[in-house]
Length: 425
Image (cartoon, rainbow, N blue to C red; front, side, top):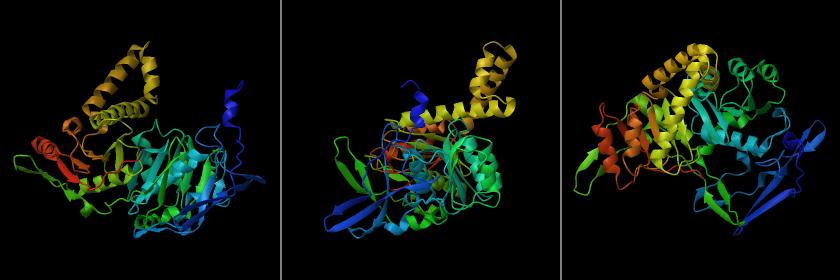
């Protein structure tokens, strides 16, 4: 352990078999282990979630499940697990488990965002920035990048349209681990290869992800004792604005509360945010405005705490954007200079004041929650930042109280139900 950096450069030897067979009753699924010829050497996954964990990638090769009348995905739906040498345009440091699962979660989200050019930046299997745009992949990626410039460092870029020079130049000017796209326009690969360790993946299936929304896959969760939990994968029921359910509920005294219906723009943003929510670790909330995330709160144990975390992050990231665009300094660099420089201290105060005035860039956003609000506190905290509409599963005993809260707010905040929960553990 004299050179700790060497652990990240060392390929962990794996001894997993070439085939993996799963039998469910009288139905069998056969998986083949994937390896690639990289530089004349056969290589599988670099390593697992950590450098000391040997790992292998298996692709479903034979078999298709029929269970409970559900259409399950078969070998023809393979995407990331079917990655070939030809599609690995530049292997860089050839991919490990986390690189592929980040791209996979990107595809998981993008299957619900096929209407427009969409771009995601995935980090630690969660989106740190997401956006879609009528103006193409380059604009979508630019919006996604500025959602969280800090967290984007070292992330995976996943898009659903051919990669453009505009998008490639943004990637080349920053540090990313992976770029995955259905195709690459002429000249883009040359720009991207300026980053020699960047993994460049051409996955044509990213252009036709809507096919995946019509089927489910066998989702397998492994327990620490070696046991397994199998479940039908999550399927988003909100595929159009009309799929949202009007929010109304009745209290114990028989009084019915009905929320304001969202505007067309609010519905568009709610649908966009709910699609992104499919790839966010629960318990989570997402703020979004004009087709881009403005804050993402992930993995908190209580819902109001999740909202508070997202708001804190929004203020912090907004201050960083202001510092970077106005002074060419990260927020951290500005704070360091402010300790000994009165002019920098004044600039920092101005930025902090502007961020408070602009509510961390959250004003005008909508809010999506992957689970219902058990109390009105999370809603009240969010509305104080100027959100205009909320989408949530519904089904709480206090739905009436939450609807009452949005109706009492001035201006009145809209609310709809999704009719399903979107937990991702």
